[in-house]
Image (cartoon, rainbow, N blue to C red; front, side, top):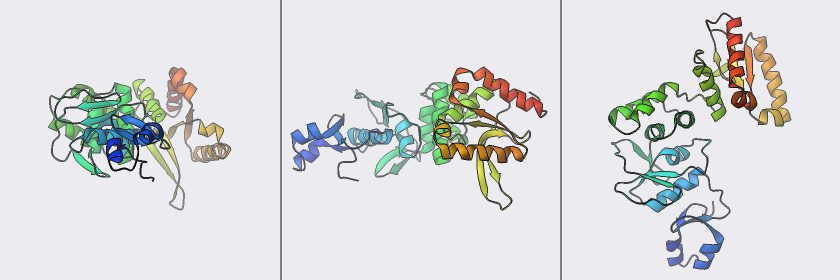
Length: 289
């Protein structure tokens, strides 16, 4: 990593004689007031998080999407504003949310020298701020990346009774599942559950006679041996992936599983048909649906 591949204060670089004002203005990406990064760097959610911490100062604590990004959570759009907790009121710049939240001991940790909310605390802040579907997607991804459990998020909520958004947070926690490995997998599960079907188990492992895992299915019901698998675009555009998908499905079905395959068009344009197909497969094997 180059010296300017992480966000830095431009005034400090100029004062040290490392850069001129002209170089700073024309050779670097301006993120916040006096905060820059090398133009070759893709400005991801994690880069925005680091820039926010540089801007807000060492007393700030990164939370929400910023903390999630630094803890390894995927699928965070770089257009989402960075988030910090900092005592006192201020007018935040564009692309930054500043929260005057109360932090209890143990709710912050250190990542690469920055103060960052723990995964459970970051999930707590996201879950009470975002709309329902966005919140579940965000918490699924964070739980998947960090293995934090919804119970740990509920424990944080118990410490902050009366905080804003608590009713919304508690309403979504039963629907959070760290087994989801992409937003479409979360969306698929939510469509199934919203239709009144039993909640599926996520990440069902298939083990060979030698004891080794050879496949993993997105979700399903072991009791009735029905699986639901979301096929992303790469499943259709990558020839090797498609060939393995066909072989894998044949092997799973040979073991007595029924597989319902879901693509983006079915999920987002015809969710009723998705539900109809899943319900039909469950009924065919005796599920009370």
